[in-house]
Every structure is written in C-alpha cells, then in structure tokens.
Length: 114
Ligand code: 5GP
Image 1 (spheres, protein in one colour):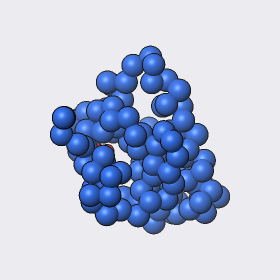
Image 2 (cartoon, rainbow, N blue to C red):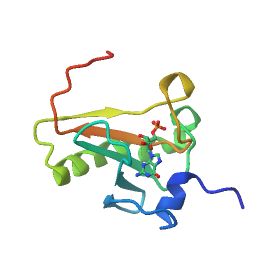
Image 3 (cartoon, helix red, strand yellow):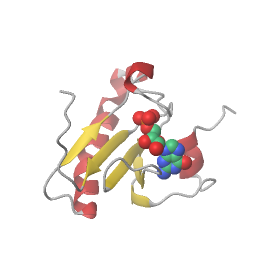
C-alpha cells in the first residue's frame, strides 16, 4: 500500500487536528502554524498531490473544494471576507504534497502578491 500523506494520517486520526468541516469528498482542519487569525486547510479525501496533477475527472472535486470555502467561512465567522490560496510546487512554497486550499481570514490583509 502506498504511504499515506500527512493529511491522510490526519484524516484517519493518526495525527490530531482541529476539524472544522467534514463531508464525503473533503475535510477542513485548522492549520498548525496559522498565518492569520483564522487559517483553515480544505483537503480532498482523494490524495491528488498538487493542483498540477489534477485531471479533467477531478473538475467537480476541485469545484467542491472552492464551494466548501463558503461553508468554512460561515462556520468561522468570516463575514468580512477571506483569502483563498493553493500553493503548487516548490516555487510557490508547497510543503505537503496533497492538494489543499488555504482559507485565511480574521484580519485585513494589506500585503498583496497580485
Ligand atoms: P503548503 O505549504 O503545502 O501550501 O501548506 C501546508 C500547510 O500544512 C502549512 O500551512 C502547514 O502549517 C500545515 N501543516 C503542516 N503540518 C501540519 C499538521 O501536522 N497539522 C496541521 N493542522 N497543519 C499542518
């Protein structure tokens, strides 16, 4: 059996995490090293390594991850907005090879990359 990713170990309860949301396709946990007052990771149960490895058949799943941002934002009280980030590959600072969507909020983010 292939090695589990870090996030699959969290999914299985082998590593503790603070779960914000769970459904059939994905789960969301608070980041262990938050970069904003609210920092949540939305993670598909399917361990796609990174956005660049996703296939056409994953389109609905990727859309579901983005729509789950609404659910996470509502649960976390991010009425004033939130930032959505996916790090793809080393130049983007990807550190966990299991695609995930960062949701950042709870403060006004002045710094912009784009
Ligand atoms: P990446 O750098 O790949 O875009 O994001 C990986 C994220 O996973 C980082 O923000 C990092 O803080 C978070 N992370 C790494 N290990 C753990 C862990 O064991 N538990 C949780 N909740 N987050 C983790």
